[in-house]
Length: 88
Image (tube, rainbow, N blue to C red):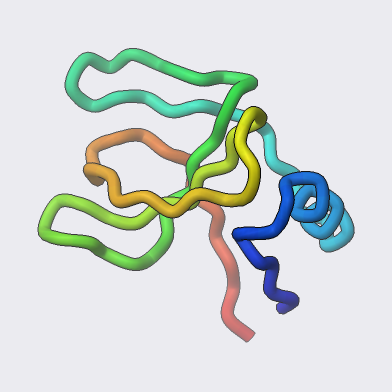
């Protein structure tokens, strides 16, 4: 699998992601404390398999108004998108 530098300019990342057939619908997220749904068509988050503390995990953030790909620790009770990848 080809790696994508998350610090690269957004246009370069978008081109690289599209070239490998990965689409990024901006689905937003649901917050756990009040069940509000935020950010549709503005951002999307994908959980990683890497835990961070007991009730937190790392996520990748894609935002239409930000350069690069973000990496944040977030409470596992938030509803973020999941991308399943099969190991070869």
